[in-house]
Image (cartoon, each protein chain N blue to C red):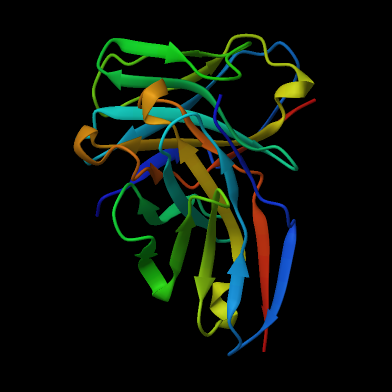
Length: 115
Length: 113
């Protein structure tokens, strides 16, 4: 069964500094990987996805994620953090061999960006 | 505006009193799903629907029912709520052609006393 792990409950970074939110995955086949963001009192919003191709994927709001097959990781990154990036971030994985409906989410990482 | 609308936003009820949380999307999406969000557990899928009259269990379906009589609506029914169903619930939808790009509602915070 596929799974995804977000090893950090919380990440703190100062505004203007680069940020990384970590995610590792486990699937039997080639993974489909996703990042979602949840702002306070809102539902999750899609940020970006990796299906195949270039290992560096660009998404919304200046975020990008790097797929690393050897390390089974899909870390979310941004070169310069904004206070408004403070939110809860979820990594998700789907093993295409198990069907469309099985999108598994991580437990989330809270990003705090200080002014 | 394209959106997924859930109602109510907040709900406090007592054990055993049947309730329904409504979900409606205006994007003509085929796929709809319900999740519950609990601290330390992330999002867990309750039920999903691939299209009208097609529903199936997710990871935590016990104590819940759903129906999909129309494409736009996907209500979540708790026939006899219990305190362990106190949670934050999200409805989501997506088109089959871009299935993983889920659109989420704003959530329903349910408290069962």
